[in-house]
Length: 404
Length: 118
Length: 97
Image (cartoon, rainbow over all chains, first blue to last red; front, side, top):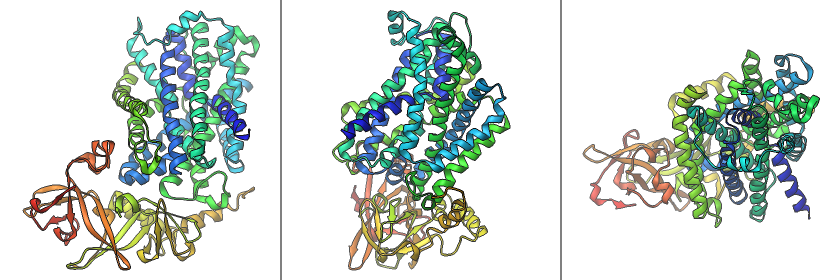
């Protein structure tokens, strides 16, 4: 009974924590510019994410090692230093974008310039990590994040034609702007399949002390959680498609994106959008900072864990504190959050093959996953993601230049 | 026993199960007409730096010296003090017998001072 | 030869044959317990190229034991210059991986 409750909570928090600055930006732009026709990209990206998350969870539950720990042990520091450094750089950029997202949301609610909010937001994020523990943080983020269901409700209330929405799940070549469409596809995948999410998920499995007995919980949380979570991103896309599309609005600011809520929520439009954006981004910011601690602590062999005493994990605390400080510093220099978001998303795609390739080995190594090795479907999926990832990595930079 | 697979980069804990770090380096003693003998495991960021590039190892050593953290580091632990090698390596020593936690201790002085430190 | 060597720095190093031709890279060290101590009795040299050095490649994806490579006994490898390990025998005398 208790496990069922925890499972439900796990799925719910995955829904609440699904969207953040990357998915909101890309979904809004995709909907505004291409109608429903990129829904398949959101679905495909979610499929990849859920599959990878399930594997990350399985790895942690059976081998008792997080992704970063397993990669260090199985491949050594010479391999790991590359994805590790890349991930830290990208995560710092993404963290900056998330802090920017929260700051913009508060600006929308208060009218006070977003630059003023960066430091306070960073400080609150730090306090959450300093004082919280894993369940409180995760459940808090997830439950508050339920406000993002506004996207789903809005899409529902706009009564989109079911046939047309269904058509969006079939990949088609658009009539116009093919490079932009391709760029958006790749961006959606990069925004959804963030490397930090995978290590974070596996670290969470270790914090929650999952064992082989919990593999079914892992499967349900990964698939149902991400699956339902993706409806939020899809809701954002559909709403943008119906409201912003006909107006030919190219979403270049979050204020423009907020307009998508006007027909459904009237004078609450900006408030609800700001709350969804702000809470979604805040949750992600906390997770990204925490993950920096996880990844460094696990790779280098420190004592780590948000459930442990802070005194016993000083290097871990220093890591998540410094990355927050760095992100706040970069954000304070002044930047365009939407641009930084799209750059981080593009960079995510570039390193994706390096992140996924270790899975191919680890998921088939009995020393790590015991008898729970990936079957042909799992391996097939991994191989597909790796190849697609490599292809996308090659085109993303040219696409960013041409279509970004 | 395969060294790269089973020893290098593996977590190390002390006699009481406390985290000490990972095996960042291994020292062997090579005498003529004999196979090389495993002499010690090395734990520490300087050793890790050495592996990536000698200049990096030197840089870490200079940093540690600058902060007065270079005594007995990177920690060399005699192979004789290794108790068992499984998914992690357990030593016969306790962490305080080595200098692996010098950085942690130094940071603890700061972290411990923050309000609400637990 | 009487030396203290950092074994991890040997990892990935090019091994040359007795007549100074490139042979492969050191990828594993097999140790055996004798009495109180552990001794490196075998060196695994992989001949598959750059990807080996990163620890990846088809060899690992398909399974650790496949792919080109040799097992070199401790007395078949000269480490007097650790930067340049050399075989002391001919390649034909080596056991395949």
